Image: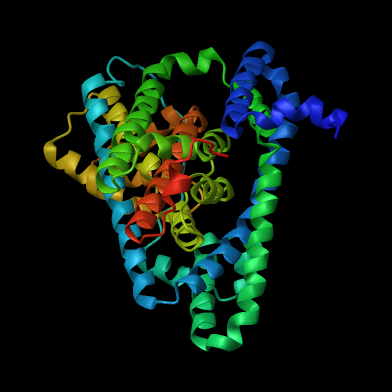
Length: 418
């Protein structure tokens, strides 16, 4: 049977791995932004459409997959075990992340010799108290939580509904079937949206590259370099090391299987916005079961902030070095402890990175006005730290899946990652 013209014309495009197409879009976007400068904003609608499409997926995908994941476990002890492992791993990797940031900043001294005034100030919202965090976990109106995209409240409601459906047994099966079908439809819609990803990433990167010129980047180039180096080392050393030594898995398979989600995270600077792609990577590329990935990844997108914690370590020392403030070992310990705990305490709060940074700086007596120094390049730093957050979510999901015997090794070890 002869191949249609459209299939023949675009067959080569379909044969290219998605991560390669996204990488090409990212590189071409940076080039277009550098060449066109401010005029590169004409491509911004491409990125906006893509981000809107991704955001469209988040709430229905998280809700349906969490309900399906909980009902598929059918064992409260298993759910508790998975939850404890998930939170334990997230806290451990966060402590590693902020320590790496502190170590590299101590060695490379990005703030030494930097003379930048900070007449302006950047205000961060006050960090929520533990009591308010716990109270706000439970939605008064689940429909309102769904409408507003409050992921933490959606998770709580979905877990409660999933447990209830499991407890009612046979009477809950029809609704479980509906959610299962709905989740499958959302997976398919995610695949359709991802086909547009290379063009969306191109639009986003062209706009960002055109917006930030060398005159903004040069004075803080060393800070940017240290943050990106620390992020790279955290993924390649800590995450790959956990995969290799704790999971007894090939880390290269994990890295290759996570690329799509990491690139979307880099271009969008949104952990929640990358969630649909993270779920797709975990299930299709790495072979994590639907039950584990549907539970661990949404939790990670809201409480796992390794990249943000790493950023705290680098930026706090950068500011201390810039101001000529010598920090003690107690200060270093305070930064690690405060940054790790604040990463959970401020999860899901708008401007969480800024809130975390202000909390850590206040603990060691640095002036909060100095945050204004890095505010201008925060988006560039945010891209790197969000990629780390997403890579960490997928790493923990893979390890939990392996520990529960819910990792398909044939899929994980396959060369043809989708």
